[in-house]
Structure formats: structure tokens, C-alpha cells
Image (cartoon, rainbow over all chains, first blue to last red):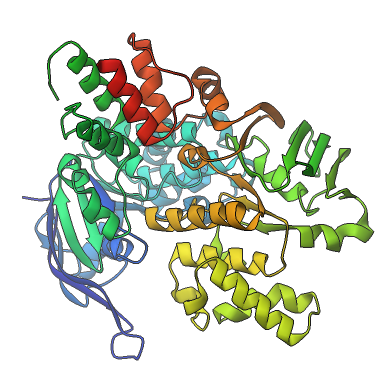
Length: 287
Length: 277
């Protein structure tokens, strides 16, 4: 059974008013336990509206959202539980820190889950460990730490609920390259350690290429592609026509093939293309 | 060419902080150039940007904008007319509910006659390719469009230099192309000096000059080809190089040989092609 399933999910903003606009139309999708899904689409394509349905922040205008087979909006109890099962990290989450100390901020979710003090403490330390927030920061005010650290604290606050599904909306926006890489590694580590399902929303084709196994592409409130990164990035013209792009590496690989250097189509990260070129040099051709 | 901005040995501390954010920063920006400033988070880039039109002034050292000292309060208005700023979040920069009113905000404050304001607003919107949206509401525009309106708002002051602090960080790929394309055009066609602060190494490929900041100092400067040929030292600063340079660097480690300074996709593909043949 898929962990998440949507059936004919449709969302209309300001229904019945002159500003009525259809943000999502008839979305049918299944996401399996443990998948790493990248979500891309230009601003306004519907991806944020979509992810907000997955933990019940928005109610479908039509259709259903199922988690483990149950309609999350069918009872008050389920809608309450879904908030802990599906953790949503918004864009620029560092603006949402509000507690007096880093420790209290990370523990906010587990406290709301009515866990024991000991369990809360365990989860705070575990979550902080995943995102690389040292315990020496626990008693500091979130206002005293750097932007990169704030972002980690905010992500830890969601991870501390041990969600089965972790959704991150542009977790690396505005971070320097080292910060981006380390946050992406933290997310991969979390998934490896817990088997959680990860949904990553990003405008960076390079980031998405590095870590997703499946790419879902939104345009105009519809899913227009749903495939492996290799298949999606092989359609550069189509992606560009809907305001997206391919990784620079894909462009290099395409140009190489035009120059009769036949690197395989499946190269979309630097290391893949490097390996493909090295094996061509040796006379082989592998992917 | 003469320089429009001279930053000399600037030291700056935020109130109550012991460590200076800028620690003897020195650089010069040529009139009409496209300049990119790189650096890790906390390296002092944004603090430097705010010094370039007198939002902040140095504790020690000096900054001259077109010959004017930024600490000279009498010159502040002239400095801000010379150097305009665009920030990361377009939503924080919109002041009006109609695009053309937003662009008119600065010229109105300059006290210009209505005809002149009209002319400047139209000209600015045309330069960023947003003229047809002049009567739209800013909140209904895409991120890239909003950011171009913000640029138009600055252009309407007819500045000689525009400083943009991570203007593409919140944008989708199409928005990023629109904004980068617009500022390159303003630089090349209209002679406006551009200072772009960014974490996207690929945006620096066409710059005339790149400065790398670390701990409040300029640690490296040169053409993109020069700066991006030092892959190891950039990585030591928590930065990367464009993917083209990264690929060639990794291939070099595996025994390939390439000519120095290859940055565009075309150059990169050709270099690999000839190395294999």
C-alpha cells in the first residue's frame, strides 16, 4: 500500500468569488514508503498547494488524500495525527522560530505530542544530531545564532516529531554551497536512518538531480511528468517551455553527444558525467 | 576605465559585537563593469553591499562613491541616486498596489515634474521588459517579474550603479534567467555598473571581475577564469565552482589535460571532445 495517495485531488482558491482560481486539478498520485521524491515546477505551478494538502493544512475542494489507506480528512482524530506523521518544513523556516531557547524550539513538536519528558529529551537530541546542531547551542536564543544554524534548528523541530513523511520546501534557498550540501546530506542521513519518505521541493535542478530518485513536475495545477530524473532531464526543451531547466551537466552531455562523444543519456550530475567520460577514454561505455 | 566605487581598508562591527564583520575590506569597482561578489554565509558580502550606498558607514577606512565619501551626510542623497539597491525578497520591496506606481515611488520622492516621472517610469519598465504589465498588481506577478519591477524602481532614479544582493535566491529557473538576463543587458547596453552578490556560481561566468570574500576580507579577485581555476582554494572557503569547471577539475585529477579557463558549456564540451580525440 502506498504511504500517500491522492485521488482526483482538486483545489480551488477563493471559490465562488471573482478571484476564483484553480490551483490543482485532478491530481492522482501514489508515493511509496521510503521513496525520495523531488517536486519541481515554476512559481505558481501548484506544488506548494499540493504539499499543504499532504498534512491537512489545506482541505481538498474535491477528491481525497489518503495516508496508509485512510482519508486524512475523514475524522478530526486523523487530521490531528497527520500533523505528526507528515512533517512539513516551510520555505525560510528560520522565520518561524519563536521560543526562548534552541532546545525549547526543537522540543515544541514533541511536547504537543504529549510525550514524556524523557522521550522529548531523547528526540530533541536525536533531531539536533541529524541536522548538526551542537548541544552547546541548546540554551542559546534562536536570535543569537547564524542564519544557517537557524535553518537547521527549524528542520530539527520537525524531525523531532519523527515524521514518517518529511516534506521540505526549498530547504537550501539562500545558503552557500557548503551549507546546501550539508543540509542535503543531513536529509539523506535522516532517511537512511529512519526509512522515512522524503519529498523535496526545489528550484535547484542541480540539488534535485543529486538526491532524488523520482521527479514529479507540476505545471498549471497538473502533474505533467512523473518519472526518474534521467527520463525527466532528457526532455530539456519541454522543461524549459514550462519555466524550468536541466542541470548544467545535462547541457554539457547533450553538447558532447552533438560533438560525437557518446556519453549516455543518464548523466545529470558531475560525478556521473565524469565516470562516463573516463570509461569512454578506456574504450568502454557504461552508465 | 575609471572606478566608480573605491572601498579602502574598511572595518565595520555591528553594535554590541566584538568581531568585525568587515575586517580591512579593500576593493575597487570599475565604471560600467559587471562585478560579482561571492562568499560563504556570514563572510560579510551583504554588509559590504549596504556600505556601497551609505546604508551603513565604515567604523574605520573609507568608501568613495563617484568621489563622494559615504560618511559625508551632505552627500548621502547624491550617493543613493548614484548607487541603487535590490534585495533578495521581492515582496519586501513593493510599496504600491500598481506596478507603475511602485516604479514611480523613487522619482516622486526626488521631486521631479510629472512629465519627467512618466517618462522615467515608462523607460524603466521598458528596459526590464515589464512595460505591458504596468497596470498590473504586483502581488499577482511571478517572482522573476516582481524582481524586474524592483529593478525598474531603481532604474527610474537613473543610477550609474545597481547593487543586487542575492536577487535570484527565491526565484525559479525561469525567473533566475529573466533577472540575470536583464541585469547583463543593463550593463552591456546601457552602461550601468552592476554589482551582483550571489551563491550561484553559474551566474558569475560572464562577469568582468569576481571578488571572493571570507571573514570580512577579499581573499581572491580576478576574471571568472582566473578565480574559478583555483578550485581547491574556493572549496576551502565553503564555495564551489560552476559545474563546468568542477567537471574539468575532476577529469584533470583523473589524468586529463585541458587548457586553462574553460567556463561555458560550449567551451567545456569542446575541451573534453578534443582531449578524447
